[in-house]
Image (tube, rainbow, N blue to C red):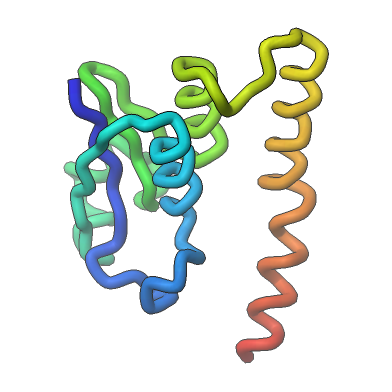
Length: 121
């Protein structure tokens, strides 16, 4: 089954790699998994078809067979658990790596994002 992820038809960052689908693409590239990309307009992200797979109407989403995921942390964790190379084999090292993944998404990224916005505005 081929993996399909969603991305912006026209990224708001002008394609500079700041959109969160980059995390998913990077993880898939690192583990050597092919994937398709379904491009969405801002309008399409809020339509019932997309809201059925992402309740917040955002990107990215991940679809593989009957599995549909949203939120990059959940998607990257799923990829890392299914394919060797992203998480250590040792149980304790694996737990620490997952803790840092959550820290990056929840503790480190928000202030960095706010600083970037402040500099832009």
